[in-house]
Every structure is written in structure tokens, then in C-alpha cells.
Amino acid sequence: MQVVSTEARAMHNVGLAGLTFWSPNINIFRDPRWGRGQETPGEDPLLASKYAVGYVKGLQDAGAAGVTDGALKVAACCKHYTAYDVDNWKGVERYTFDAKVSQQDLDDTFQPPFKSCVLDGNVASVMCSYNKVNGKPTCADKDLLEGVIRGDWKLNGYIVSDCDSVDVLYTQQHYTKTPEEAAAITIKSGLDLNCGNFLAQHTVAAVQAGELSEEDVDRAITNNFIMLMRLGFFDGDPRELAFGSLGPKDVCTSSNRELARETARQGIVLLKNNGALPLSAKSIKSMAVIGPNANASFTMIGNYEGTPCKYTTPLQGLGASVNTVYQPGCTNVGCSGNSLQLSTAVAAAASADVTVLVVGADQSIERESLDRTSLLLPGQQTQLVSAVANASRGPVILVVMSGGPFDISFAKASDKISAILWVGYPGEAGGAALADIIFGSHNPSGRLPVTWYPASYADTVKMTDMRMRPDTSTGYPGRTYRFYTGDTVFAFGDGLSYTKMSHQLVSAPPSYVSMQLAEDHPCRAEECASVEAASDHCEDLAFDVKLRVRNAGEVAGAHSVLLFSSPPSAHNAPAKHLLGFEKVSLAPGEAGTVAFRVDVCRDLSVVDELGGRKVALGGHTLHVGDLKHTVELRV
Image (cartoon, rainbow, N blue to C red; front, side, top):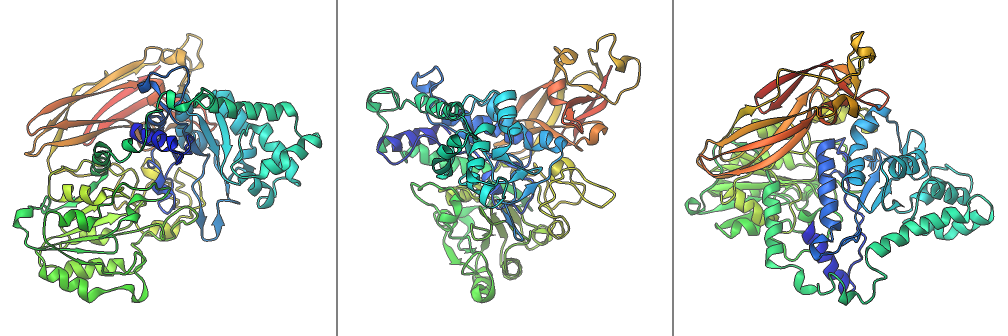
């Protein structure tokens, strides 16, 4: 993100970019059909929280130029606050959707990334969303804005609406009777800036009608102007200030282009490999590259895209090393009707030494304002994959390019498909990165940030049901790896490598840890399922978990160590939740140590039914892969 902000400053200096970036999107990828899930870091609150902090600090940090005292390189914005993850599903639109969320789910799942973004990232802005939460539009909810963001979290910045959301709460949600009331209630709730012209048109009238004070308006304007000051707008000639020398020469540098390639390499996830990968380019005389995304360019950069330095499509990336024969198989990703071109695709696969199929989605399938209704590959893509695989003379490598997951159980089970890769929307250098993985110059280390559900999930679970926890009485299976009780196609955290990594526990906490309760605490006299996650109960109550990770294979590689905890069942706790993750790079035969500091109140607590943090008493099982260690919390 430091490179992104450097390029942003460079483009700003020549009049081609602003300095406020309404990014990142840190909403939880709660439902696999969500069209905007592609913008997010995934389904886990801890992962989203750490992503938010890193993203924001990378964008905003002006320290590298010696600028301090609250100055910003660019201003980031964490969005969309809160419980926003329905865009347009079967006629239910984000503009009028009322997210019915329990306090437990709100504080356990939806709020943590925003809390971390403000408290730990010191973000410049938070954007309130279109939807209502429990009957109130978020941009008119004083408890959520003034109470939580400014009051509890002490935001040092401004609160902005999603574009036209103030207009939406008046004209579509009919939350107020007049536009003046809409202007007044949002500003008094804590809104500082309206994306759109609604407040410009109606705020003066709201003040004149006595529904809004000038002091309220002054407060909002002050928050906005402070941000301009922190960005250096009033500090004189920008060419004489920090970042003033940046320009076109600092955009699309060779190191920046290589970073795009490395980012894509690290994000690619190997989901299946029967030994076919990596391929040897020297032994391949011809490769069939087939599929509607096989020559994708614009598709690779997803939505809210910038202008790439240069595209390297999958076809171009693979063709740089071997002779290729290209057949799209379908004229578009929708792959419906007459767009299926089966005979030419089958013929190409039948005559090639190896076949790479690149399928999946694009913005016509999943995007802002468009959620999916099915988890199957679009149109006749499944038919294309099966026919090509059955006709192929050599190994078949299936590549899925998409933001969201698909049910590709047929490919996972097929003996004709040798390997499966998920590349997401891999960016401008995606094709080069794919070739690096397939030909083995880079060992894959990506992990899935979301659960891949069976297609039946979309048939039985309404996208509008916001409940995270399962309900056994109705058969509701719950959501995300933390609560979902059904079968998966692939699980959160799945990802293979060309080498084998082993874990050994070096040190762990004792078998039990005692909570520090006052003598008169009621849980000393009676049995309790949990105690409050209060600082006086957990002062200095932390321990280290150290693991020795060894590369037991013959290929160098990176490995992400994921530490999970499975807590006791109090308060409908998650089946497991992520405590931390660290990545280690190891040469063949090399070993390294990975350490996690586990704070009992912070890391082992769960959210109770009222939204409070509690430490469940009893056995907490810590696990990394198949390695497990249980620590019992006692009073």
C-alpha cells in the first residue's frame, strides 16, 4: 500500500488523482454469493481487522518522508459501516435492505474490522452504508456514528456517507418525511460529509427551519477541513513539500510492476494437485490454453480498478515459456446459448501435451449491485470443463478466476483433472504469476480466505438471513468456517504447496491457567460458564505458543502458519476462530520458529448474547493443522 500511495501522490501532482481514497472495503464476506465480496479480505473478523490496519497504515503513513504530527500521505476510508453485504439478490436491493442483526453477531462478526481500523489503524475516515441495521439507516444512527465511532473508538477524522445514501434514506427508505429532516438527522448523528449533492441542497433549509443548528454544521465542516490540513492543502507550494517531487517517473516503475507480479503469486491458491504440477516447460511441445478467461485482461483487475501499466494475460504468461494453442471455448464468461464452442476446444485439448482451462467469473457475473444466485460455474462452463478434460491427451490444469467461490466438486473428484488453482482477480500481472506457479519458478503458498460451499447452500439459505450461528431446530447451517455446520467443497485456510511442511510444538502454556478474580467475585462462590474479559481479570495473563516449522520437501517455499482456538461452548461460541497467522519462508530441509503471543482476554474471549466480551471457562484447544494443545481456564 505504500507503493499505491506513492503512485497516488505522483498522479495527484500532475492533476490526475485526489488524495482521499475511499478504501478499503473491510466488510465480512459473509455470504458466498455477494457481488462485492471480491473487494474484501475474506470471511474472518481477525483477518479483516489485520488487513484493515495494514492497508490503512500503508496508504496514510507519511513517516517515510519525515512528516509527522498527524500528517497524511493520502487519506484512507474504511467502508461500509456496518453489516453491509447484500447488493442486489433476487430483487432485494442494498438501498432498502434492513439487516436484522443480533447484538452478538454485530459485535462478534461485523464490527471488529471497523474497530481495529479506527483504534489501531487511525484511519482518516469511515463510510456509513446504504442499508438499515435493525430498522435504522446507518447514516442516521447516532448510536453507531456518534456513539461508537466517535465516542467509543475516538475517530480522529471524518464520517462520510456512501454516495447518495442520505438521499436514499429519504426517497427510497422513507425514513424521514422531509429532505430537511434527512439532512438534520444525519448531521446530528455524526455525519460530516455527504457523497452527492443532497446536503448541499437541503442543509441551509434545515438550519432555517430550526431542525439543525449552525454549531452542528460547523462541527462537520471542521472535521473535513482538519483532514485537508493533515493532507497539506494549506501548507504552501506543494512542489516544495514532502512528496512534491513525485511524478510520472514514479508510476509503473520496474519494481512496482514486479511487486504486482509477486502480489499475484502470493495470492494464488493451489487446491488440488495429483503430482502434475509443477510442469516442466522443456518437456512440453504444445499446450492448449482454453476457457473464457484464458486471455483475460481487464477481468483480472476486478472492480474499482485503476489503469494498469501493462496486462499479462494467462495466455501470454503461459505462451512465454511454451507453444500454445488458444481456444476460448465460450465467447464470454456467461457461456450460455450459442456461445459454447465445444468442438474446437475439445480438438485443441486432444492434440496438446497439456491443457490449462481458465474459467470462472467477471463483472457480468458478480459486482457491485449484482449478487449471484447460484454457486455453480456460470452457464455451460461445467460442460466445457468436463468435455475438454475427457478429451485431453495429457494433464488438465483447471484455473478458476473469480472473486467469490464456486462449487467445483465435479472437478475436485475427477481423475481427468490433475490440478486446480484459484487465482482470484490477480491484477495486471496475473498471467505472468500464473505461469510462475504452473512452471514451478514460484512455489504456491496462498490460502483460501473464504469457505467454498456446495451448490445446495444457495438453494436452502437465504442471502438476507444475517444470522451467523446455526439453528439446529430449523436446519439453518450457519455461516463462515467459524459457525457453518455443513459440508464444504474447500475450507477456509485450504491451500497446497509443492513441498511438505511439518509442525512441532516447541513451547505452549501449562495445562491450566487461573483467572485473576477478586475475592468477592461471585464466580468464586458459584460455578460460572464465563467471566468478564476485564483487564483486572487478565493483567499479565498471556502466554507464548512457539512452533518449529520444517520444510521436509525438496522445494523452497513459504508457509502460512494459522493458529486457531476452539473454545468451550458457552454463549454459542464459534466452533473455532483464528487467533493469528505468520508466514515463514524455508529452504529444503530448513526449519524455523514461529511464535504467537496469546492474550487470554483479547484472544480467548468470546462475545456473549448482549455483545459483551466474556472469557469462557474450561478447555480451549489451540491447533495448527493436526497439532493440538488444550489449556483449561479456571477461576
